[in-house]
Amino acid sequence: MLVDGLAIYRKLQGDDQDSVRLLTVEDLIAIAQRLTPTECHEQLLKQIRQTVGDKSWRVRYMAANHFNELAEAVGVELVREELIGHFVQLLKDNEAEVRTAGAGQIPGFSKLLDKEVILARIVPCVRDLSQDSSQHVRSALANHISGLAPLLGREVTTEHLLPLFLQLLKDEFPEVRLHIISKLETVNSVIGIDMLSDSLLPAIIELAEDKSWRVRQAIIEYIPLLATQLGKSFFDEQLGNLCMSWLGDPVYSIRESATVNLKKLTEVFGVEWAQSTIVPKIIGMAQHPNYLYRLTTVQAIATIAPALNPELVQSDVIEPLLQLAVDPIPNIRFNVGKALESVGSAFGPRGRDLAQQRIVPMLEQQKADSDADVRFHATRALQHISVAIQG
Image 1 (cartoon, one colour):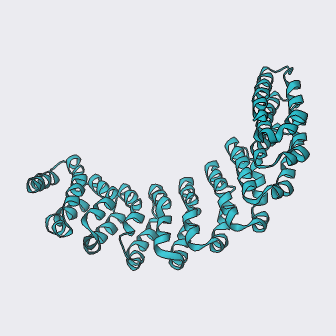
Image 2 (image 1 turned 180 degrees about the vertical axis):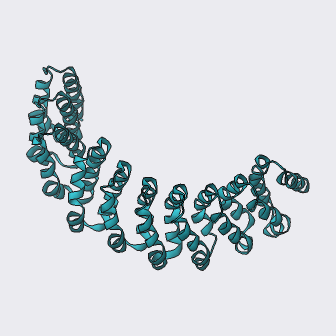
Image 3 (image 1 turned 120 degrees about the vertical axis):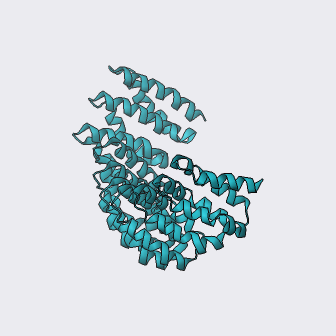
């Protein structure tokens, strides 16, 4: 049966139509999975070479896109003797689509190789791909290059990969920068926070003001992890003001992410840190003449309050929120109603005094507001708080 299948496969693999030949790549993998490494060497070596070197870029693309599956199917010996050369060939292909597919396979294929081989054969290709003329190739590389760090170890990563990370962090296309930022945790686990902060922190701070809001958002999402490893004093010195500046970003999604970031930082550094470091700055925005800053204050309080305690909310946080409950802008007033619902419900029975003494009276007042949205949210907030404080 297998002999017949091989004969049919070889006929299809030699078909004149590339739309047929590209479909045989998965057949090649399926057949290789059923053969021993020795049989793969005897029966499939010629077909592997033909597929990787096919005149149609579509076939080569398919080969590059499934290269890890093929490598795992044929066995380590054939990988080291034959496939490493073919993989390098695909990474240097004339077509950007093929190089893009190959870049996505780099970490998985490299797991089958010794460190010395990765350094000698793969890393030079990675260096070339980091300067590729196609943004799609560089983006694919940025999305996967961090997977090499655990395979190469601290010393080699620092010497050979770190310069490439820095280069890609400054790439002109946002997607490239975005992919590098999103995978920094893997690099950090290998080279350590000291090396990461010394080499990459300046680039990260620069990207915090990137013109692409998606890049700025990716930086914000990475901050709590960075804060955990940098420590409180270093964070306050290097990144504290930066985190607060995001609250005034012109893009709503950034402001929203910034408030979530402050909550996560409070969970990392504790309530006392929040009380002395970020709460005063949030409260200070409550009197800002620009209504967007006042609105951000409301949203920041609603987000961060559950990470605090009722006593701190009672003493430092609730008063500015109550003042904003009578703001001339209806949009702010009904958002205050939503925030009061969040704060009043956050602590359950533990926050009963806070809810009954400060929050409920203001919501009762908002129930008579001239704006329908304000009345609606106040009514809903009273219902939810009543349930929450009863436990």
